Image (tube, rainbow, N blue to C red; front, side, top):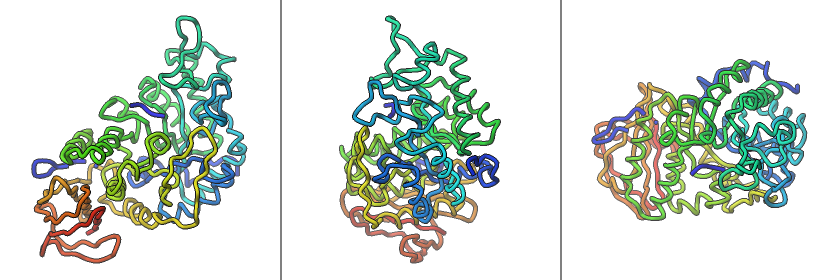
Length: 448
């Protein structure tokens, strides 16, 4: 559900049952957020069983792939009144402090969180604060918690008739919402929240909620909003969505728009600064189900865009099945399990990128010590090239963003010295030449 780096370049510079007391969950996200990545888990579609226990068996594989943070789509029970399809939307909750029986029990969830922490993952859960389903428990116990139309009926959320909106002028409701968030931190030891439609909720609620919930422990907060459109929310959340980039990059490919427009948009994001981060992605539950897979959207530049998402200033976000790759749109309101094959064609590709993101200081997101320079080339209309620097550490990224082969040269003083290609391990001295011959879909990533 969604609402529609420091830089300098020539002309453009460019970014048990309770775990809360276990030490490995208490290290502050103020540090690990800079090097993490996020993998969105669609429990319903992840396995034929569609349960926490079944997903738990997949976690060692994801750990090996370099995943650091697991984001679980809503785990709360789904409202039955006015639900869509036979199973309904996970974003139409009927209770904020219970588990969807489709996925298992509360103990199953706690067991999975404990196992995730044992493996070294961080765990965040989807939090849907703007609305509930029609038969949420509050509709009976506290109908005053909801917005009402002139006829006294619950107010339907914009464009989505299976959900009704809450009233954030009601202070008692706010406190109840915060208590529900605290419940998951106290009882299950999660490490943060991905906040659905965050900018549809008053920003002062998030300020209030973060202050209160973090009295338990520091948390990571990912908000579904674009900071270019809602800058005030960036003062509350650690990271936000890059919706404008996602839409613009898709239009760039499908409508053959100028690459310079993408570069200009990156400048706008970079101007936000490093007090917050952007999440970069090619797919998620909304995009996959409603707009198509990353291959439908990006065609021959799918891999270059994926590399950008993992190496630009911010935090990379992956969706269930991208490591296959998953080439189908998953049903949203019905059971439609991912067709795993035991062959993960993209897993090594993502492992290489995610490990570089986590280990190389030049790729730290939201760190003022990192500078990112968009590089000048002889094919600026087709090539996206940039170098990120943090002290002696540097990462160079060169991407063919066109639909044709390109011969070009990087002409920029910000690139010098010897680098190693992270994919084929070969070395290259850029003081002796900066020429490239790229085929369609080609890319190169080097570290110094």
